[in-house]
Length: 80
Image 1 (cartoon, rainbow, N blue to C red):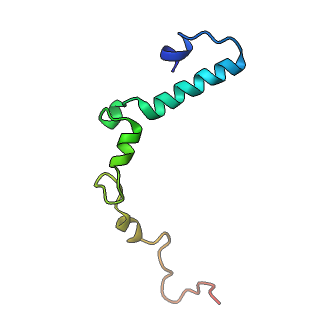
Image 2 (image 1 turned 120 degrees about the vertical axis):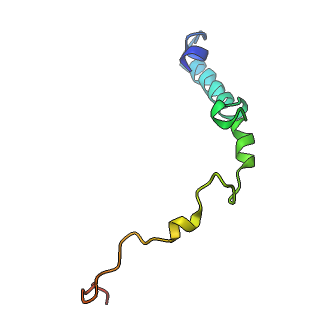
Image 3 (image 1 turned 180 degrees about the horizontal axis):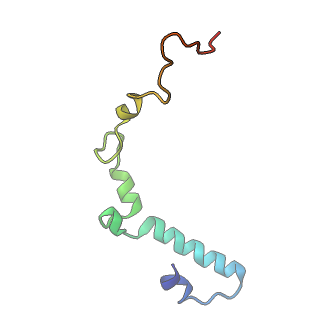
């Protein structure tokens, strides 16, 4: 952001700075390809993601283990 916007842009007042920065952020986050996304735009990358995509975590892995292990036999759990 510093190299592409802040060092090269002349801001006339605070409102002008806010407008130019907001436009740059919108362009960067929606229309520009990113190397980390295999040079796709964020919108194009999001369109390819699905709930069954291999790159996403498998939800069954999360359901397999409980957060807290069960109480040992003979220990009262405080249930009514």
